[in-house]
Length: 126
Image (cartoon, rainbow, N blue to C red; front, side, top):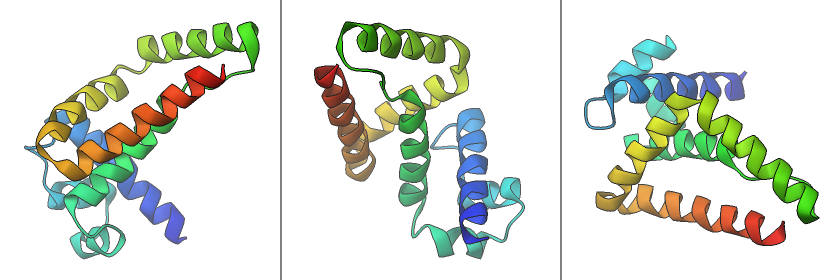
């Protein structure tokens, strides 16, 4: 049950952040979108930044380059990534927006750098 509530909050945050942007989004609006009390959002996430990092982790998980090893794996991974870029415009827009936020917010910037490092590792492994 806890994981479902947490996931529901992350999905609501993704939706609100995608539509309104980081600066224009409040924890209260995210709580309303998730259908939970604002205090429950703070129970799962200490701050807006921690919640945004959870959203970023979900976005990055969708964007990860994964595939088989070798040339066939590289082709499959990049083909999947290309399809994702084309089909998931909300995810891409939010990721790009969070890149900008990460320039000014060290905590979010560190989360983005972790994703980039992991993805570079996937590319090198392929």
